[in-house]
Length: 253
View 1 (tube, rainbow, N blue to C red):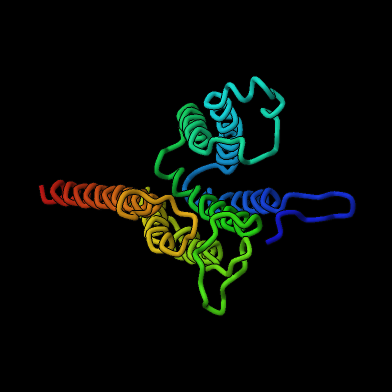
View 2: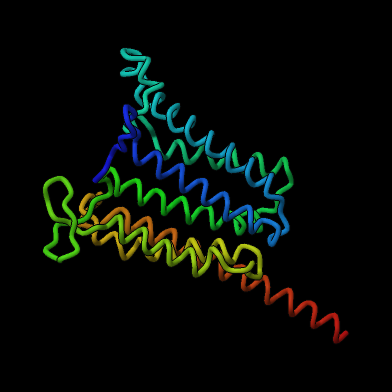
């Protein structure tokens, strides 16, 4: 693992650098494809920027609200770069709220916007996997396979590499394709494939949260996301079929 990158006297966190790189690549891919979805890249850039700000501030403020007593004793921790002092759920909730408010005010169409953002989401997931690999997080189970890597003194499945490879495949299969009809199909296909990959790859994780009977929480969540995405795709397919039937009926009449 390489948690820090030493550049002369500077020690840069590799995870943060990889995440920033993935954001830049994702923005570049998105900007090149925004027009194909009938959207302006400037509006999408602002949407992502504001959502990222909401994620950072929301995650830190949510952590502060939950751990108010400890922050009273050490208020400067609110400005710490320690990733442990962050609530991911709170950050995601804040990011979603900010994105929805901005999109509504700018009149951005919901499904076309999500379709246009799909390459960004995929690239960000790749960056998260790379950041986990750099920091030794989201590590795999012990293995004797020849491609195992040493993490925390134990040879383990390179679960982070599995996730990066799976997301790269999904990016090329769905994220970089021409816009699919109906609107929303591209994004929901990405979500369904990502959930399916997570459902399979979670079995190789060594840090999974286990529920009763040894059931993995990550797989339960993946099943839920997969079901919602498939239902969404079926709903879109039904709407498209109904629209075609309506046009045909009008023509016959």
